Length: 206
Ligand SMILES: CC(C)(COP(=O)(O)OP(=O)(O)OC[C@H]1O[C@@H](n2cnc3c(N)ncnc32)[C@H](O)[C@@H]1OP(=O)(O)O)[C@@H](O)C(=O)NCCC(=O)NCCS
Image (cartoon, rainbow, N blue to C red; front, side, top):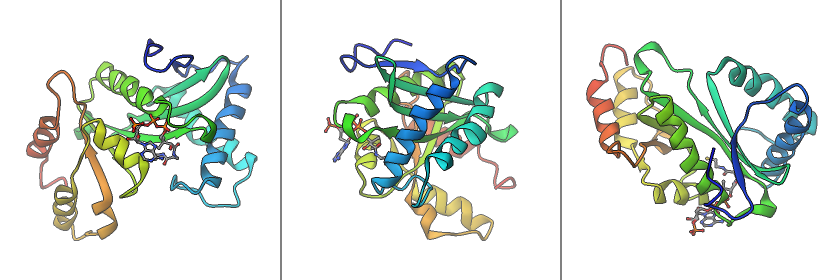
């Protein structure tokens, strides 16, 4: 995958773990996750969080999906070292095959503000198109640096839509209002993809 032009010295690869490299890769990914958890970011885990916990996440929750091709993982490398990563979860329900969820955008604290997360996201949108997904969704913290990044990539907050969908099933939850609905910005997908997806949504399903 060619995103090398985006950040000097950084290469972005589709993660295809092989027997010879998987242990080293998982150790590097675990180190990033652990560092991010301890930096206080809201990425679903709480401290104390050990290297074994972090390794277990990659081995048990991520690797099987990568192998089954229901999850794509991108890694940003500086030389052999993994310094950032992001995932696209493709395992959606049968009537939501146009959607995919962006998760675990993580950059090593020592490598931040160099454009690595942005490069990962741009590359991930290319992967989403390859997978024929036209609507990307994600959750993030309101007011976080990640929110600024997503907004700068033309991702839009869809609070009203989420509230409306969940009220239909009497599962209204204010926290869900913080979720962000997103759409790839190029190739005419834009925010119209989100609107199209909403129009296609069958209220009987929600
Ligand atoms: C959020 C995160 C992935 C950003 O990684 P990064 O490689 O430093 O981001 P980039 O250098 O590509 O920055 C892209 C844009 O994001 C925004 N941004 C990133 N870090 C920021 C910060 N600390 N403060 C304000 N804006 C910030 C800016 O708009 C920035 O663009 P700019 O540098 O042109 O101003 C990284 O800080 C991280 O791993 N955080 C912890 C995990 C996390 O919160 N992940 C998101 C889960 S939803």
